[in-house]
Image 1: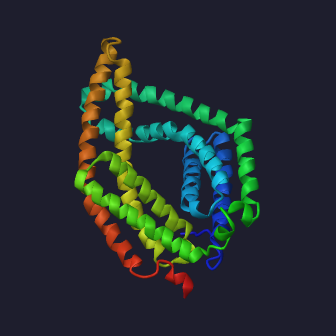
Image 2: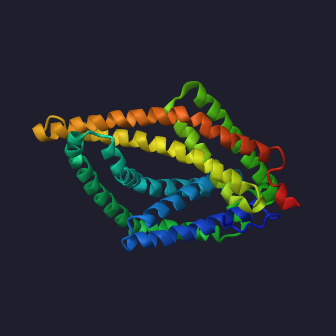
Image 3: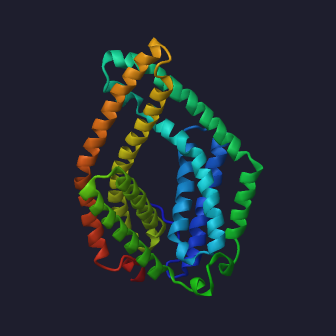
Length: 314
């Protein structure tokens, strides 16, 4: 795994700048790919770069200038929202073969209008993303972000004390706090199996994974192993989240189509069969989750027994 080439014995604010500049470079590169017509990898990678940037803002919140951070946080949140539905549609359509296989022959035929409808919606969402990337306001926002990142430490940091915070203790405390939060949510999930809690756990797992990736250079021998196992947890929860989103999309289509004519009623019936499959898969993934999470917990606990950043000190 490639790190962010942080100055491990340096200041936390310098590390924040390094992480943000790297992500900003990725944002611009993938946005250019989208504008050139790439509707696959570049859209996904653009989303990930925005998501990582927002995660880094949360991670470095204790040392960042509050007003500036709040401004850019809202800006990147708005950008992220412009890609959310497009992503949901892409994943839904990628799962088309799996979903068709789960249906009867009659339902497979009758559900085809659903996939055609989603394909058309995907095209429109992509067009809207292109429009957003060409807006003057979007470019002005990125110019402001670039200027902020290239300003001095005193401008970026919350105050004079934050400027002096060292990276190693900051990273150690941040990762431990995130891991504790994940453990707490995991216990709550196992007690209730509430989807909203699982959704929050997925977000916290993602935040922890990104933190470990940002701080990779502080413990390059042990962090990648934890990241690999955490990704399995994140993928499991992500698959569950996708199923819930696809259930919502399908329900919306049923509400829009039901009662229009006999043909759409047949499609709605097939959509209902798909809903039943989605519910079954949600239950299966929920039941499997404790075993998936246990393997990650054991590995993370072994790392957390010592200083998380011990490798960088030696």
